[in-house]
Length: 141
Image (cartoon, rainbow, N blue to C red; front, top):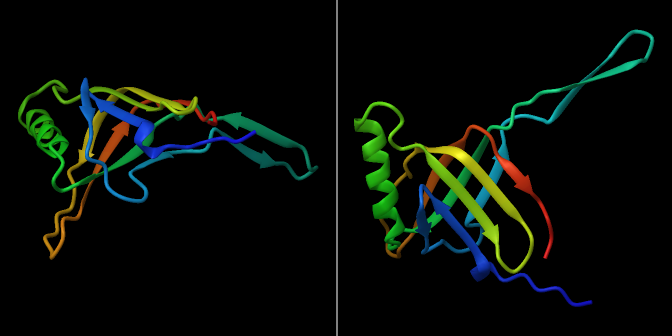
């Protein structure tokens, strides 16, 4: 059976803001902070496994410098920096609409604005988002 992946069918939103204008190549990267389980072996060879419970994750969103989503994320970062009480914390949702993969971070925030470079051509802006607890469905197409 033929399966199709379409990068144009991957959608992302943060704090209710639909994001668009993604960069070329890898435009969303999700990395868990910790392993789900740790293990240790005793001197007799018995293995003990411990659940970490650490579901934090870092999400890197690559937008083109021309994307209007940069304006929205920049405004949200400024509000978070200049307002007490977590004003920039919001829900993150990433979905592959041509498949079944879904990633949710109910409590997410901008950890770091993008590094900036100007050159001959329009380049990428990589936003670093953190989430306190990622809910993952690593399903296929």
